[in-house]
Length: 404
Image 1 (spheres, rainbow, N blue to C red):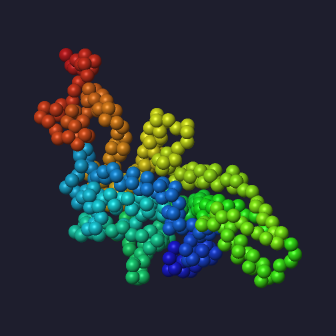
Image 2 (cartoon, rainbow, N blue to C red):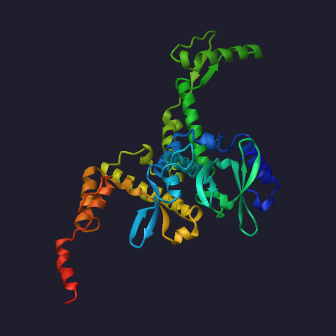
Image 3 (cartoon, rainbow, N blue to C red):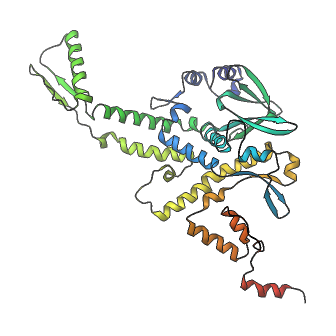
């Protein structure tokens, strides 16, 4: 949250405030502290490899499949390549970004911040460019009549109000209906524990996985002697270049190390559990980010990949498609059969043998023409292959249905 948004929060009525004073103070000082003692915000959360991997696997799943504007004319559905919105979504939304880069950013914003904002550059009543905005620079306000306005903080620090019709706002899961929930904030305890255990594990290895201990001497040390002894132990016992050096002591002093094992600290077990916990928060199968247990087999892994498409990516596809239909297409275009569609069938392709078997069954049963099957393989059509085949066991039934 930026300072301006925080001040607006404090000036708002108590019932409309999103954060209390303590939370605002933590936000202004680079994030919100959690029980594990670390600060969790978008920047620190991305330093957790599980968060980064979950965000990437969803964002790239949104970006890697084609997104097209389609036109339905009766039973025929074809890409509306002549529509001005088609090249924006399919290839180039603005002068400096590709469609992949744009949708990859959209996925990251939705997964981590819960909201994606893009300014609609309109000319002659048509959207000519989509300009993505940093979610942290946009504040959404809802009036008493449920109208929405957007306050955007520009790069020079100035703010301007943008009407709802000039903003494309895609929301993640929402509680109030006009603003998406922030997943990083909701899962901050799980992310904070992952950060804390990783930091403590790193420090343990930095010190040569050396345990602490008790150094006892005869007699009483004055403050100067205590400090000198403390500095000497810190230099020669912390690990690093001295971790294998023997500890030489005199004057009847004794060094008693305190034992500690990795099992006692539960580092590995905790870190493994946090992978699963963070994956659960982002609704990502752990195998999709490279984590699997010994119980996984090739067959089960294949079903997990399919589950990722069906249960993780498909809801995001539907959310974005409906947002395009409602906020980028006009009502007249929607009534005329225009709609947005992700080509997720590319993710459902298996090996070439599986693809060939799948297309063969569709062609032989008359569901696809041979040229439609070729199109799914990005092959050019051939003459005479536009008529669907009729299965032999269906010919008799068709003859019986013909009038005599």
